Image 1: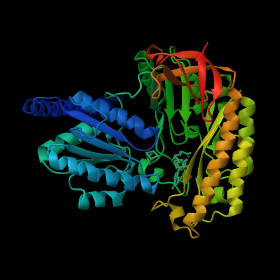
Image 2 (image 1 turned 90 degrees about the horizontal axis):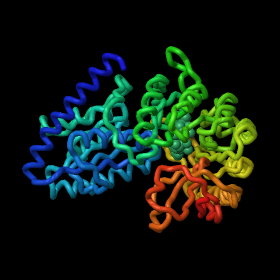
Image 3 (image 1 turned 60 degrees about the horizontal axis):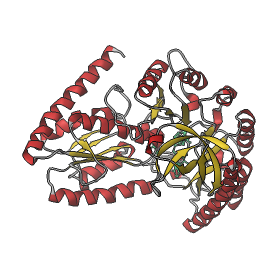
Image 4 (image 1 turned 120 degrees about the vertical axis):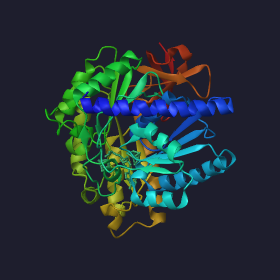
Length: 469
Ligand code: SAH
Ligand code: SF4
Ligand code: F3S
């Protein structure tokens, strides 16, 4: 770590300790511990940021809880689709009612929504009761902002427009003991025409391989068996480093970490998924046989308008290459329905690619117009009833294909990483195969975090019942 990094970290540690003093004063007054709740919306990047937030809040002295009755509640928001924003505003209203009963309750809002100018204006105007507001680039500074709130007595808003400094070496509280997300890069340079992420997460920036390896080694020493490497386009990892490294080379180095059992990654972009990557995944024992390969649309015409830089044909050819290079691979995807100008013919192309690619599962989204993106300016927005009807047809096709695909595991023995006791039956545990498919089988809590061989006995469509062998 550089000297500057050390300095920045020490500054935050100072604020953690100053906030700690304030919290202890309040504890004494109330005669109880104070609680903190971080609510995550959106993707795995946000989930990882929330672990960092909670880690700092716990270091300050708060006790983590999942209840929004907590003394501090922070919403870590997503803005990829419009309805995500509306939900957050609705929920803020509920927090306000709670704050009327408990005026010392603290409310925070951070994440991708907070990076939108319009949102900040709305918060200033109509949500004065939100105590601290910060963005995606200064999550690490939550203690400093909270301290400013304590000393100023008024709303604190601090939004950065780029990643000036990244402080990584602060406490985190992982949701799962045995698995963790690890950021390998931040931001995105792709500017797909429908997508707001490049505007709220800034330009692409890779972390140094040594920093990533050191973080994973620490995690493994702390009980982690599986890491999920996170980036908006992991294929372009390392290109802008002083000493460039490819994503495949990074994977090879991570594989050598003793004690690490599984490696996942998200998301590779179909436009530049290399043969080198397919080879490294195909040969590896540790890297999961799972490629999440967002399609978005099966129509070459729409893909061009989306600025995705691949065609229907090149996508299908890539799927074939992946299947040939990675034995028994699970391929999953993201699809958007109702992009401006989508015709029935374009949509049929999407269905065709779903059938031909044989996805194990797919996340399907209705196109949402995001102000500031090129697609928001396009004419021919598709009428809602047409989109809904197509969306339902897509779901049906995705389900049919997925059920058919998942059946291929029936009767086979798969290595399963056990996550937890089943939510539905205390005599069962739930785990995931390397292709990410869920399996439920008889077992107890002691199995959590271990990899065990399980025979897949009964396919339930998207998941399995199995027996430990
Ligand atoms: N970087 C990843 C995706 C991040 S966003 C990638 O390129 O694949 C996750 C998913 O949200 C996208 O894959 C896309 O399917 C969906 N999405 C993004 N913007 C959207 C919008 N405006 N409307 C609907 N879905 C959208
Ligand atoms: Fe959005 Fe495209 Fe970047 Fe993914 S690659 S985050 S869809 S702009
Ligand atoms: Fe949402 Fe931000 Fe992730 S907009 S999808 S939380 S990067």
